[in-house]
Image (tube, rainbow, N blue to C red; front, side, top):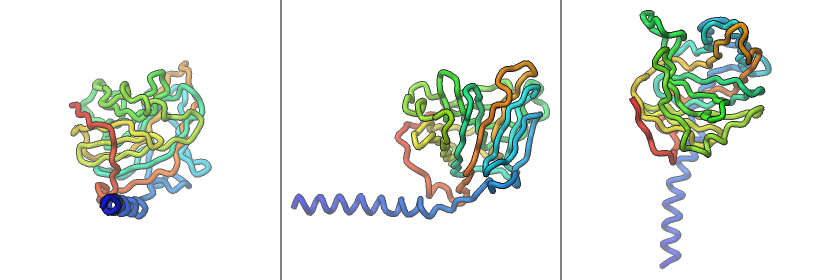
Length: 241
């Protein structure tokens, strides 16, 4: 009888796992970056530099950049699953990935960015909040989900090595993994649809930190019914307005 119960439990677990694995393996991924040029992308902002080399988008921070610069998709996206690899060679270069971002309103006199939206931070400060989510909008900048209580995610980013972001933006729920480590599970309704953008920070002419690079590659997304391919996360969702 015990063996029969064990076999029954094993059968149920297998029946649940195999379809999930099959779905992940056959997910309808779309390549957003062709590895050759910036077809499908555009530059927005000031004098930050981005170029393609060795199948990578390289974002180059330069002195005298008065405002933030963005390498942004030409298309807008609402619900999606996004994956990309990124590498930072040198300490001190913060950056970020924006999702569902839009053009800054013309009447926003205090905004020094051309785009605003959810920013998933690449954070090299001592707090190490890479994978946290920031509301990137002019004078109302604020953290929506930090990593104060997530030591595993704070240790996940590796300087000088390739790292992977996985972002699931489905409805009002945004989940982020950094190197397969759960980082954030945000509930928020502020931004519903917009561009995907790579951010290059501004830098004064005399500022330190010029000529620093972030490399991106293997940028792909699921936009066709992404809910079917969403992953479970053991972080409790947190909402903030």
